[in-house]
Image 1 (tube, helix red, strand yellow):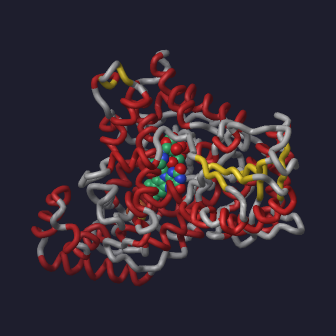
Image 2 (image 1 turned 180 degrees about the vertical axis):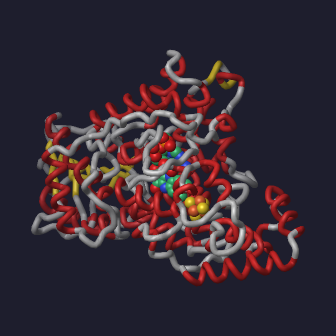
Length: 510
Ligand SMILES: Cc1cc2nc3c(=O)[nH]c(=O)nc-3n(C[C@H](O)[C@H](O)[C@H](O)COP(=O)(O)OP(=O)(O)OC[C@H]3O[C@@H](n4cnc5c(N)ncnc54)[C@H](O)[C@@H]3O)c2cc1C
Ligand code: SF4
């Protein structure tokens, strides 16, 4: 490398976008792109094997595409003999190899990585430019400005700002369909006999098969199976999967967005979050394609608005909240939940069928859809008072799309209410009746959602009331919980005692 002009450009495993800011002014005659597979990133939690394959295989494909563009790539593989196993170690070695004039990198998505990057200028004695990640609709600074002075940070109002900013589903200053949000139409159970679409998935190529062999050998103790690996690992395959979703699934996505079904993992969901989170798909292109499907009469407004809200609203909102509140955000434990995570979260070995199904999908595919995560896996952890740190580690480990900036607010704030209500206006706590209404899981279960107490009773039922009773000092003043607290108060004393006793026995048996 020419010492005067050459820059070293570091691309991280979730920065696999050709328009990433760190490549924007690349000088292909002098600059070198550095990509490193590091052991510490694969093991800081025990990531699902499929998640490691997605990231490493997508990195290797991306490096190949850069080389096809004439860019020089210095690529360090996980099993290279001299690999130090850490970002800082590998950047230091690369600086020694190339003697660059400066280091350029796009800001990392996670606080943990940002912390050690901030030391690089002093540690390596060369200029380090950390550039904004422009792939999102909004920046952390913009979110912080929106949040300033607000008592409550409700996603819905941020989402409306984002609609106005982007013009997505807007008619001048007004929302298309004269309504911002069609969520009330999107809570139906799966109609009996509804045919589910066959999903377009991606067969592993040689690069992916090599990575699968490496991961299978090296990460034997990590959770998850590899045999059903079918995630796209290139931008081209991710776009094919997106187009297939929009054509075949989006029209029904809204209506049954919250439904769950025995032995059916994907239903009408997009299956694009891992690809969005590592940069193979860009949020803007995804939302514009969905919007075009509405304008071309291919999908109804409730489906398209519901889908766009997830990306333009929720995804941007959780990122803004993460950067606004870190590092203190993860430390709160508003409901003082301290129970250890039950072993069945890793194995699926439980007679509660809903949990068995959702953990089973997770092990097989490194995937579970939103309601499985929130209303089954998260809801159980909330009701049982599982320690937020243990639940967060699990969610960060087991999903192919799990990166802390998006996982943490969803788990800590939305599912566990551990932030005391910054993110959600009330805990997403529900009894067995909700799961029974939204799925066919209960028909295959050893317990009954109709039984409230006794050996056949669904544990979610007595855990729900016990949760409210246990957390009365923190939650009773919440106006959105006034009704259940009135119902609890009206219960005969003996019934409340029996609920507490059955909940205690159940929790001690975990
Ligand atoms: C407890 C819990 C943990 C979660 N952890 C993660 C995580 O680690 N990584 C992650 O990407 N998503 C996470 N989510 C959000 C959501 O469950 C997944 O994005 C979604 O299930 C991915 O599947 P899909 O692509 O089929 O999404 P679809 O249901 O088809 O939705 C489309 C897209 O919207 C975005 N989206 C939807 N909901 C959210 C949300 N709440 N937050 C951010 N983006 C959203 C995703 O990018 C998703 O791909 C979590 C949700 C909960 C309740
Ligand atoms: S009865 Fe209860 S534990 Fe069993 S599947 Fe239904 S909700 Fe889950």
